[in-house]
Length: 328
Image (cartoon, rainbow, N blue to C red; front, side, top):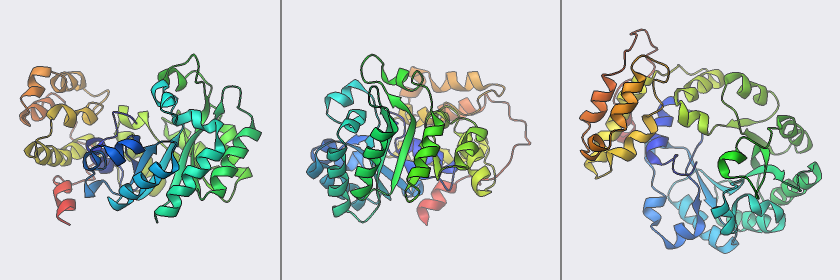
């Protein structure tokens, strides 16, 4: 997710889910090729495996960006053809590209020819006015023939005129049955469902029919949801917010020492302790501009002191896990 799933967010999410494939923010191919490549493609070894999500519409440029991402150690290259942002549309990529399946296929083929890691596509069910199964099947067939074997499908169409990105996440109705049917029509492909999945029951309903689920804002709002989902799918022990935060503090310390801003480091942990006593005071401490400008880890420790822990939460993760992972 743009402005969310940076290296700090992914570090936290990995603590809650040892099995998930994590994603970068969408970065444009041009930014990777011509911009601060090292900063855009940075990730900690403890985050792995991570997919690099690219935006773009020029096959050659995307191929060069994909090579850079694969060389940096990313496990998958994902082409985002589902973002409905007007800014993205003006750049000739995102959901608007679904109207040009041949062009998307050329992009996939160019990237797949230059990297050994999987090249995948994230899309919507269609576009307003182009939302039939025939249209969707033609798009999926084109990217499949180009070498894409996994498609992440947001179970809504995109409305490019009249709705902003936030509205595109809620106003077009979810159509999970169309994702199920798509898997039936393309059994040879891995179909991963996305959109509106914020309960274990909702995830389980998809997992009975398709190959996986992609979680976005539910994990950002309440990171521990990933632990519940990981436990349901893989039988892993549940991880409490306190244990995850104890481990994440190691990341905070090391990143502050490298010059990172405390404000960026605490954004992923604002959703912890939702609904627990003291959660509001916890968020207030971590949202105070003056305190954040101090760049002192004591700000986080003070916030933690505001939360009333029950003492009987699951203890599935030892503190300092990150340091141990890095040492390994």
